[in-house]
Length: 241
Image (cartoon, rainbow, N blue to C red):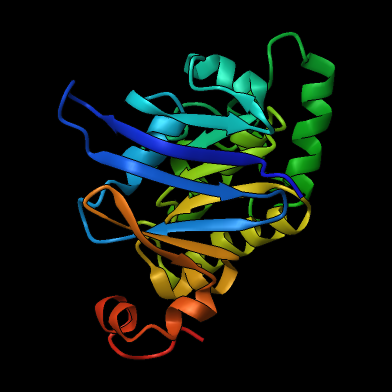
């Protein structure tokens, strides 16, 4: 099966000539969750933001379903099937749940957008029945679910998420990650930046470890759990299972 998203030789950063991400690469297929982990400052967020077109890319190849998207601006990457959920400021607090979802729909898709919004809300009991509720009154977990739903309004084939469980209570972490696993099981390809390694490993098919912007290790969660260096560094010597 071909990759839904394939990244090769990515070199990116915020200042020309000073890359944060160096020679990064990974691929993820439809129905898979790939998680990027690494120490603070390893370039994980910069990597997914570069794929989304929000960070300057100096070199590399980004292909979405076999089509090169690295020359495209962010809005055209979204139109091509790439969704992105940033870590913060990912909903409009003064707008309702329904209005937030409407803003995620492609332009001119009013009727289809309403159908899509209804379908997404039906799958999210935490939000269903609260369409008129202001996003600013939602809990942290509900906000993240709304942000994910809004990104899904454009019907992406690949969804990038930057630390979606940051600052959430344990129950909300479980809610968000459970929904992401459900979406992958339904065929979506997901690339996830996550600091909660134990929780992320439970839903991941693949894991890539970044250190100083460069992948140093990759494999299945089970394979990486068996590596004593990774276990000691991220898991305190214990199992995530």
